[in-house]
Amino acid sequence: MKELIEKYLIDNNIPLYTQKERKSYIDAIIYGVNEAGISQDTLTRFAKKYFPDKPKHVRIKNWILKLHGLKSCFNCEKVLSIENFSVSSYNTNGLRYICKECDYRDYVKPTKNAVEARRRAAKLQRTTAWSELESIKEFYKNCPSGYHVDHIIPLQGKNVSGLHVLSNLQYLLASENFKKSNNFNV
Image (cartoon, helix red, strand yellow):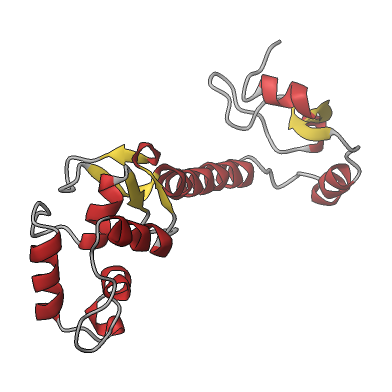
């Protein structure tokens, strides 16, 4: 991002440093006035002079990125094309503050955790007092490579739900198990 902003300033004949103190405008634009050691008044005058079309509520960094069709992700801090951001009616620029990849991770993780939690709960509910728990553990441990331990009658079937007992377990190729899902065919 620093290189992009520096190139933009050079290409548009905008000074890189303050006149008196020789402090970096680039650092002030990217990291803020405190980090660069520039007063807010100095940066405000700089913005009014060199970025007259920039709306007041938009940071210079974001304005320059927007001119190049780019945006910075608040989460991963990557500078990406605006196509990598979802639309949002809540934000002034009309885009989400995090990229689609971060947004997807934030969505998928809780969803995946919820699915796994439901499965664990179903397994516990369907484990009987007379289940052969040690034999079931052995069955899982001896599962051949490329196979899954499958419940013949699914624990969370639509029409019927099976029990978590040894007689309801089978080894099934992983690809077949994914096809079967929670279905039970007689």
